[in-house]
Image 1: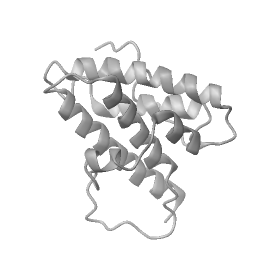
Image 2 (image 1 turned 90 degrees about the vertical axis):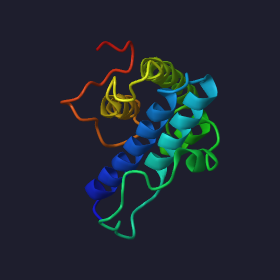
Image 3 (image 1 turned 135 degrees about the vertical axis):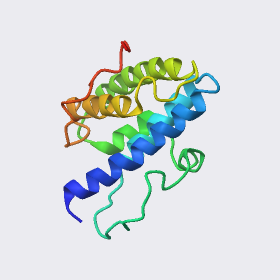
Length: 154
């Protein structure tokens, strides 16, 4: 599988995770632990070495439910360090803190009842943008979508 294809699959799976979290937060407010574990799951997805086998065509965005993913990860800081061990820990920690604040801002909007206001694709794109800027992923965010999580402006 090509690198672009692997990235597309990871992005699609990560989007399913963000959508699942937004669905959950649309019926109840997110707490700090929810935000941290959701970020940890996203970082684990992006750090996973999926290179060998092709992904079946029938693969849906949600390969595994969010609760199952959460059982596999540690903290967001630990998972983020796996993305690029060359980046200093304090840089990673600051980035994760900023992402948590931003994702919490989106979660607060979703907790008003609409899990697509703001759009989950915008939230994930902003997370990827921050990871790319912080040299934790090699693929840039989509330049046609918003790249900021904070503050959310409809």
